[in-house]
Length: 218
Image (cartoon, rainbow, N blue to C red; front, side, top):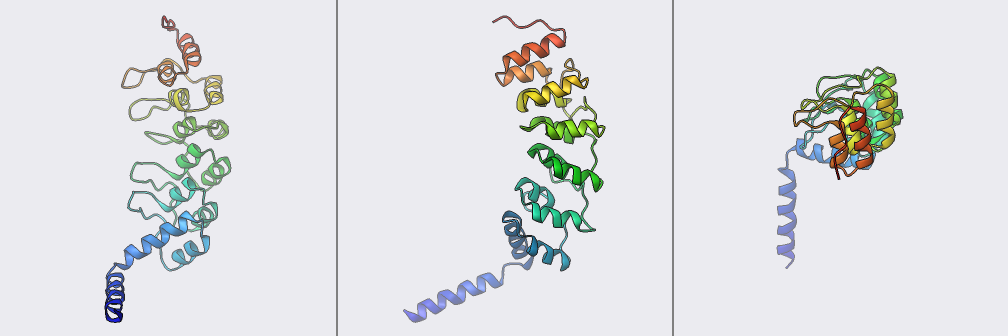
């Protein structure tokens, strides 16, 4: 029995030994990100870790930290001189887009102060802010010069995203700052159609009226 146990321990040790060091490193970094372990991240960076590396899901450490609200880690990453604040993940998203989606106004401000772009081709931080539950980041981005009718790759606008996914205050704010309710995306949908697809019929009727379209018969 003792011999069998010793063999099991030896096999486990050998298996661990052949795990590539890079894979062990990746697991440790993911764990540190998840529990907001800023000291481990600091040591990793001091040892030459790449703050812009993509994990197995194509995410950068800074985007993961903001997504998981690991703000101590995010602060360490943002302060590192090699961190590219607008380094995209595999889906073309940036840290500012994540902060906007999550409604983290103070982090949006910190990122922009470090050089994060308020406007960018394709999906923009304003699209993500419009899709989130709050509206403070959206208001701030507009004040910083965010293009209010920016088209996404499928020509959806921030107003369309707010009409389906965002807060009603975001819709009000966008309209108040001149957002156009008339454009259609590649599927032929207007902001009113986005609102109606989410069961927001009163909002849809309002947007349709502003766009000069007749309200649908019920």
